[in-house]
Length: 265
Image: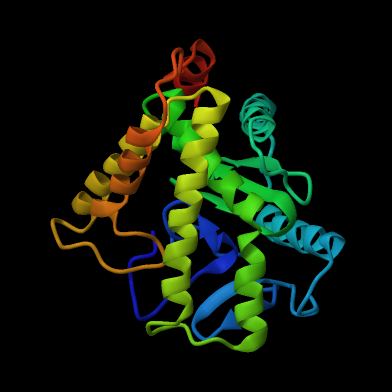
């Protein structure tokens, strides 16, 4: 996870769930696009300042190709791929906002607890998230967060920062902007879960789990500022949002299919 300011690595997981040092570093044969110390993407230096939708889709496919170079088994798990994309389809069907491009979730078996949204509708979720989540609502929280990034098209925000060489640090810097974008993806993701019939408390539970994991990983040291909201405080805005939502019967916590896949993977 990204927890090491002032040295920041954003990689193609610039809009990820938990930060980005958890993402594998692509092969050296690819060209990095940097904003200061922040890695915006790979092999996309020719992308114009105001890319068309098709150019964004093409850029996302380039990022996916980079991942495939280092993960030859990407998408080899067809049943998990189909399961995750069925969830994504239900979230989008319940959304008032529709994506500018098709969204697809890709599955990696690289042992990382993360998910990441890339340009043009490409999302990668690492299979180990089954270990991190206790029930389907927590896993859906991961997917909903990344889908929200695609709905918001947050990549374009960072791409504009890169083209304008915006400062990374400071009150008006990219880090502060990223905190707002991540919080926005959390809120939109929770609303998508509720609208599609999943219990958004799964997102609250997931963030509290992340905080516990972070405390253990840091051996009790305080949370460090990053591109994502503070672990200890991240769940509170979602709890406040849920308290304002009308009661809704039948919200899903888990499913037999989730339990089956969790046992297998």
